[in-house]
Image 1 (tube, rainbow, N blue to C red):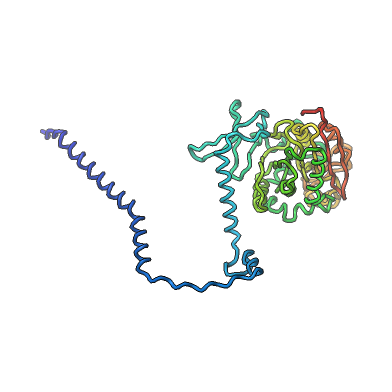
Image 2: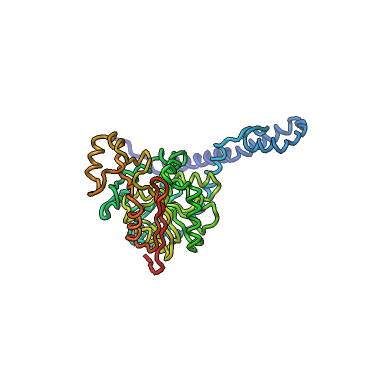
Length: 421
């Protein structure tokens, strides 16, 4: 026969005793760990008291002004060379602090930013429980959520929009595909944009960034819109938008681009120049997430030839402008001398058979021939008349288009006083 089970009272007593012993050990260990910093601090004080007092070092002669200036610039001096990485870390830390503060202080988002699908207002929300933490702009009515990227911009692209390359609009000039948009999403292009890429445009007659920003400022101030909001659309690395913001002559500057890499580079360059980064939006030019009639001016420098849907994008620019708002743009015309926009028979002959066949197939009926073969995806406008017709078609009342140099067009438009959209 098996042994009868012992009573439960003894087992409960042993379990209770084990629990008490365990708690005592845990408390003792916690006390020892908590007292550890104090004991270490006391040992440091005792060691310092037992050591002889250090001899006072003779005071170093004051540097001459020229030496101090050199030391501050990291050229020479007793302080050692300046380390750029330390300054970069400091700038990133300050930027992170501003972003964290904005997360808690700004529950409501900017009034000019709306849902790109419904054009309804968005609410800023922070999800602090769970991982990863996220800040987003939310349209609760239609369950739409647009994240605020860690790089500091708001991603307001239409889900599945494909960069605005969809149908329903058609090209305004020579065949336009999404290739031009995808090219500028490359980090290599954003890195090179202000390191020689943008300067090449001047060979075709484009004004330099300083001259272009000066002309934009004169147009905006002349229209009485300097106190409003100016949008730098397809801003790239912020080469012009940065100058507009630094001028101090505009009420507010907002940057927008489809390229994540360009927006990151623009933010980095704003911080590098000691400027507070403005609101930056990642969006499609053909579906602008901007409230109707909320902008005083729109600038699109060296951009129209990259837009996959030119007509739809121009209609959007017209919609977001206030009455008497102004639009300034520069773009390429046919005949541009550029590695991405050739227009000669020799360059056509050097293209692959597939590229040449596709260009001939897509060439507009009645045109002189294919345009921009190796750079398919860009729109090279045929002339100032075509651009003027496009602006009028988009709804602008006052339109001025002029040709500069070999193949640059400068566009200046004013929205009619009675038009709200």
